[in-house]
Image (cartoon, rainbow, N blue to C red):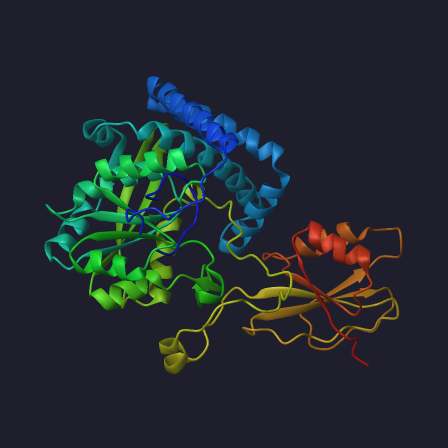
Length: 438
């Protein structure tokens, strides 16, 4: 990633004048100053250590984070199950989950150390593969859109990107402005000194397009949900809302499109690999490129975000829009990894109606009390044991773990089942109330 921290952003430019802010209180200014001193001092301390030592310390702290963050573990576990369903065994996913936390710690600490490396030192830290793709793309003078993921030592990529630009051409990327204004100004100043222009989400996309059209390079982090403004396309086989920004920029400016992955080679060493786009610069093809990038080293990807998060208010719907081109050419996008929903029958065995789902990529299963008649057209039946023999939480966890893909939401016949609703919230499941089918 080309920013100071592993945080999302899928919209535009920040070296324009800063927004006019309300003057912060004295307490807030003192807090920012203390935070800035602590951060700069810690960054300097890491600079004294070798790259390998810093990475090892980060791995240890990543292990600690794994052990004390059950909620974050749940998010990572669910995300990995969706991404690699049918590809990795349960045991392999458990090991990958642990390694994700260790690599996140190592990459975070290494990025802080990398911020102060010289160009020569950086060359000894990062091994570039397919660097000629960059040279070829920039030699055409068309400008460049780079597809990126929250992956690896993002600071190494931020340092390297400007060095590949032709004379007079800027490298740029999006970033989320830091809450601490002192550190934010410092970040902007350092990035400008290194030849990297930052675009914030508050700025106009026209500024980004102008930079690319003028022959500059622009990096877009594409691996996060973007809600109702995104396009619904498959990503790792599951339909989700994806940013249309790289596709829009490439089509409107005629730029080249490449992607970059960062893979850990050893403590304090990374491989930066350049990837080509396959096909036209559609959002679907951009996400296929992103998937290839992330598959280079899944353990280096920042899976801490809930990429396929269910909207608890309406979990049957995936928020977003189908691109006009895709809708006219081949209809709605097709999922190879469908969502799972559980129809929760009441004590009398009455099963709730199926809610209308958009997109229609949901497989329905049923949870029945002992002796109830099985409903038609469900993919699987789960029998709930008698009261007290199994808690609601244990039952839902059994259902969730009973398939390769995780359970996404529960459909119940009444809003009054407080225990079921509360358990769904605790487990991160959506909940829908529907009338029972007569």
